[in-house]
Length: 107
Image 1: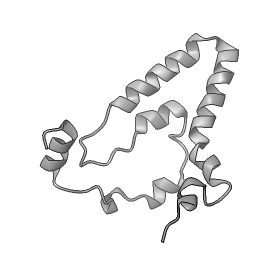
Image 2 (image 1 turned 120 degrees about the horizontal axis):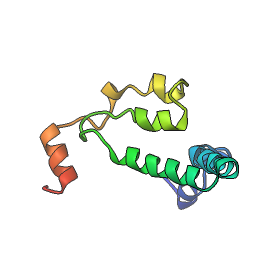
Image 3 (image 1 turned 180 degrees about the horizontal axis):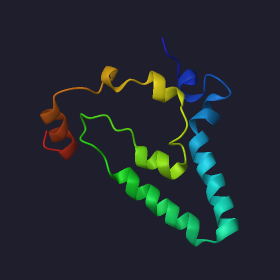
């Protein structure tokens, strides 16, 4: 049985930090960029992040978000997800037509 306390509190002290790592790193990078180059640099980079996040593949295809990784500078690093996150074993695989219709709100 699950309890409400276990759903609200993190299971490990580092879980919350690990979950928000990328957000905190982006904030630090934006603050550093603002101090070095001025206000326009982080605003331009945030605009590029939003534009890249909006571009998606079809719902039944796995998206690697390589453009976002390139903007963040993570394109040359190998992480846990790069090796053990095989998209062919994803539970999101399904009927392509139904997934697109669901995403468009036709179902």
